[in-house]
Image (cartoon, rainbow, N blue to C red; front, top):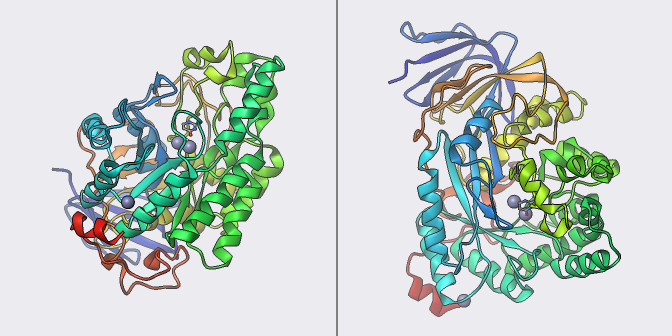
Length: 497
Ligand code: DUC
Ligand code: ZN
Ligand code: ZN
Ligand code: ZN
C-alpha cells in the first residue's frame, strides 16, 4: 500500500487550463485539486512541485511491443517498453495486436493479453484486421463486448497485411454498427509495390530505395480514400502516423466539412527530417527507415504547425525500435529492412521541445495532444487524460528548465538505436506517478512487473451522451449520426446488415 502524496506549489496543466494548485493523490486516484495551501493531509508524503508543471501522464496511441513484424520480433516487450515509457512521462499506451499465422483474431489477441501480464503501466489494444469473413465479423463483435473499440487496417504491405478497398468498405460499416472506430495505415500499397520493383531493377537497393518507393503522394491518396470510405459508412476515422503535409490537409479539409476524422502524427514526424536517410553510411541511414517515411523539413514544419494549431489532433510514436543487428538484415535490399523506429520514451520530450520551446503551443495544448485527446478518442476519458478529482493518478512533473540530451547510451528501451540521438531538450520529466505511485524519480525507475492493468474501453454510444459538444476533439459526439445504441445480440446485428 503506497502512501498518499501531496504535491505542493506546482502549476497544474489540463487541456483547458493552467492553474497554480496543490494536488492530493491517494489509493491510485486524484483525491483533490485545490488552491495552494488549501489541502489538508497530515499523513501524506509531501512533494515540492514549485517551478514545475504537473500534467496528466502521456498516452501513446500507437506502439508495437512484443510483436512479430516483417519476420522479426521487436526487442521491447511489455516490460522494457513500458519501463522506457514511464521514464519519459508516458503512463498509458495502446498497442497494435498484429495478426498471427492462420489469422485467428481472438487467438492472436489472447497472445497479447498473455504477453501484457508483464506490464508495469496501464494499457489497451487496437486489433489489426487483415482478412474478411463471417468469423472475423463475429470476432469483432466479441472484442467490442470485451472492451476493444478500435480496429486497424493496413492499406499498404501488399500480399501481407494490406486489405482491399472492398474489405475497407465492409469493415467500416461493421465498425459503425458496433460503435467502434476504424484506424488506417494510409499508404497505397499497390503503387508502392510497383515503385519497389522499378527501383530494385534499377539497382537501387539501399535505404534510399525505401524512401524513393513511398513518396508523400501515396500517403495522401490513401488518406483521401480512407476518408471517403469513412464518409460512405458514416463512421469516424482515425488516421495513424500522418507524416506529410498533403495527408494532413486531406484530414483538415474533411474536418472542416464536419466529418469526424482524427489525425495522429508522430514524434519522428515533428522532431526529425529525412536528411540522414540519404547518408552513404548504411548503419546511419537504416536507423530512420520506417513507414510511412520520415519526410523533408518542409513536411516536418507543416505537420508540427498542424499539430500545434489543430489540423492534427494528437502525437504518438509507432514505437517499433529495432536493434542495429536487425536493421542490418536490410543490407542486401531495403525490402528486407525491418521498418520502424523508437519513440515511446522520447515522445513527451520531443513534443515539448517542438511545441513549447518553439513557441508554437501552450502547455495546455501540449497536454491535449499528448494525453487528453487520446483519452477522449479511445474512450478512456475522464479516467485518463485529465487531472481532476476521481481521475487515475497518472501524473508527471516536468521541470521546464532542466536540460538533457537524448541518447541510446542512457535510454531504457532495449533497442541499441535512438533516432533522436544527440537531440538537446530543454524541459525534463523529473517525476512520473503511475496509479498513484512514484515510478520514476528523474534518475531511477521503481516499477513493478504485473502492476499494469488492461483498460476495457466501451464502444461509443450511451457513454458520451450529454457531454459538451463544443469540446475541441468532439469525441463527446464522435458519431455524426448521434449516439449509437450498443447492441450485444450478434445474430440480430447480422440480420440487419
Ligand atoms: N511501420 C513501421 O515503420 N513500423 C511498424 C509498422 C508500420 O506500419
Ligand atoms: Zn502503420
Ligand atoms: Zn504502427
Ligand atoms: Zn457483414
